[in-house]
Length: 264
Image 1 (spheres, rainbow, N blue to C red):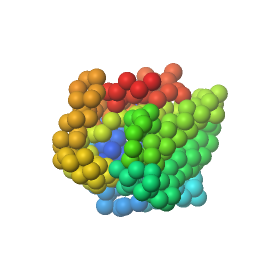
Image 2 (image 1 turned 45 degrees about the horizontal axis):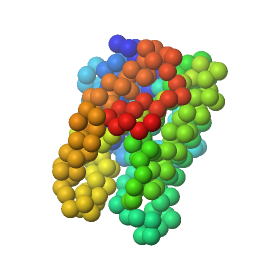
Image 3 (image 1 turned 90 degrees about the vertical axis):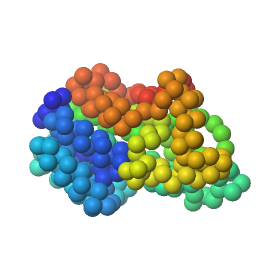
Image 4 (image 1 turned 45 degrees about the vertical axis):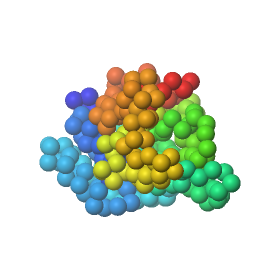
């Protein structure tokens, strides 16, 4: 198991993406700590991991709360002798499909503040524990909106671009101490929608604006990729597990593009 003996914290670990990643890290041998704002989802993920023979724990916290995140990371590092992997999988329902003239400052700022603030608070909390042992990786997640232009997703685009920039710079901040930072850029993952992803209402609003069903909109998105398909949760989890492992020891400061779009 490629993560045997490692400790992973998954922020937003009760959600569709975070839960899948936590289960994958558990299957790969990591001791997993899942955190988020809602206990039921976290409890389910921990139950699944432990029922499969893994080691997992949960706590409720808001990833934007620097004090809470730092306190939790310190507790994990003390109980598990360190932190090896931190994955930011939090999600927030936000406005898309509204052009600039109809977008309020608060609607624009919500995804920008949420995703960039949480990236900073998580990195600040886990970095000292990784630097101390000269190993570890901070994993982030974005979408192709970081590189795309078009009406209706201004806040989301700026948020994704900001997270990618933060992840790249973080690699430079921590690289000399043996700590890596990698961002994964994924396209829409249809499997997350029936699992309660925040993307569900966002996609529904955009599909209505286009006069399509969500399935039709996602089919069109798949057709627009070079592989003519969208990524699956298994694809994402395999990528994250590899990036968290020693097999990716020389990978840092990059955005791993698994969107199926040629954007760079």
